[in-house]
Amino acid sequence: MNRTGTLLTIGLTAAVLLFAVQNLTSVPVVFLMWHIETSVSLIVLGPFLMGLVVGAVATLLARARPPRAAPAAKAGPPDRAT
Image (cartoon, rainbow, N blue to C red; front, side, top):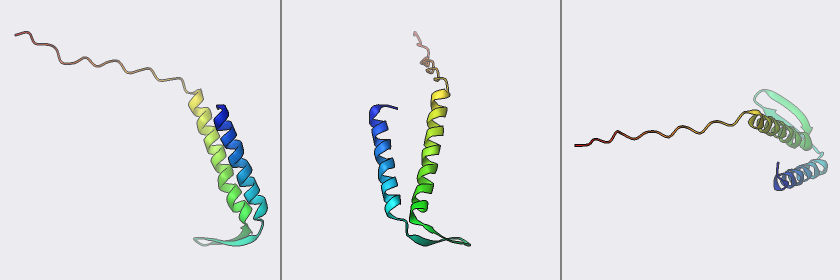
């Protein structure tokens, strides 16, 4: 990862953590038939952490894959000498 990407990741992580720390209030969450009461910080941190993991795995898989060979140039239709 280049320096800009690293700085953006650190900044976004800091902002999400700051938001989570400031929002510790419990709220009811209703999803289909589930009813739970949890803090806003868990609701924010859960998807954020899942996104970090998915992004890291995707990056590692992309780097581990060997580069694809360039496709061979297609030959045009044969020239017809008349």
